[in-house]
Structure formats: C-alpha cells, structure tokens
Image (tube, rainbow, N blue to C red):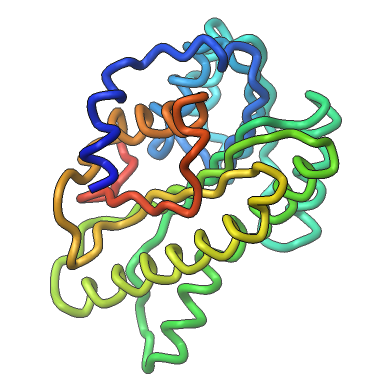
Amino acid sequence: MLMSVIEPELASSVYGELAGARVLLTGLTASGGVDVARSFADHKARLIIQTPDLSPDLVELTAHMAEQACEVRMFDEPVHDQAAAVRLAQKSATAFGGFDVVVNFIAAEQPVGIADYDELSDYVSDTLLPATQITRVAANRMRLMRNEGLILNIVSMAPPADAREMAVSSLIRATLADLTRREAQAWSDAAIRINAIGPRSMDACGHCLASEPEIAALAMYLASRKGRQLTGQVFDAENASLRC
C-alpha cells in the first residue's frame, strides 16, 4: 500500500538537497549496490564506501563515481563485530565530520547444513549482525552530532526455489522487520529514520521493487526531504537481488 502511494514520486529522481550529503555505504561490491552508489554520486554527495571485496571492477566503478560525486573515500576493512563497526563509524565521522545517510548492503544466502530451527535462527542473526551493529553505532553518532538522518538496510537474496528456501527467506524478512521497527522507535526522538528493503513476504500485495534501479530510486526518496516522515518501514523487493 505504501509503495503504491509513493511510487509516482519516484519518477522525480532529482533531489537537490542531497548535494554535499555525507553518505556511508557499507557492504558495497561490484555486483551489489552499485546503482544506489551511482545515484548518490550523481547527486553530488560525499561518499564513504566500505567494501568486503576490493575487486578491480569495484576500483574502476569507484573511479567513475569519483568523477560525479563531490568526494569519494574507500575503506576495505571488514566489519564483523562491534569494534569494527565503531572504528568504521569513527573513521567516517572524522573524514566528513559526521554523516547524513547510511546504507548497509547485506547479501544473504541460503544456509547449508542447518539441522534445526535454533541453528537457522542463529544463522539469520549472524547474517544481520554486522548491519545491526553499524546501524546502532551510526545512529548514536548522528545523535551525538545532532544530525537528522537516514539509515537504510538492504537485504539481497536470490528468489526461493522451494518451500524450504521460502521459509528461510520469510524468517530473514521477519527478523529484519522486527529489527527495523525496534531501532526506528529507539532513535525516533533524535529524528533518525531507520528503514529497510528485504525479500518479498509471502503475503505481500501491491507493488514490489523489481530491480536495483528501483531500489536506488527508493533509497534516494527516503534520503530526501520527501521521505523524512517515513521510519520503521520495510519495503518488499521481489527477486531481491542487487546484482547488475
């Protein structure tokens, strides 16, 4: 329903207020999240990119984005625990004096060798843990520096091939939704918005995001003035792969 309301606005893809915005992108790879990064670069934002895979393709893409963006910096230190999340937030805040937007890209895969529900729950928790840590550290940094901002967690996952994979996908989305609601409520007093994009739920109806350009358009909308009333929302992405 919500996507149906804002869908006409997504065609207006130019948001002048994002020029110079300080944007932290984590988990970016050459095959995931590039359109989102390009959109911020095209709006002349200042980008800090954290990548777990500093491939030649990503280096080339970053060089291209640097021609459009106001500024681009890159970190390739992995973020697997609270200490690494704190270090990344501190580096980013030092580099640009804080940040206005944080987008965490989370590549979720179907687990192998899971024997029971407890193991599956642990797997889902581990998958979302780095982004959860970054969300909390970044939100705290925004609050300390009195920055109203957006944190967007984007989970990409291949379409389920059978009932088992559908169950895993549904559990990931349900956990993401619960996390998003709780974090949005926790940081609402500081005008920090927490939203997410995840695999399509089984009972989803209406429009679902079907491609990375659509995901990028929504990310820009949420980061702009038009999206400042939206928090605690999880948007469905059908075939939620960020691969170009």
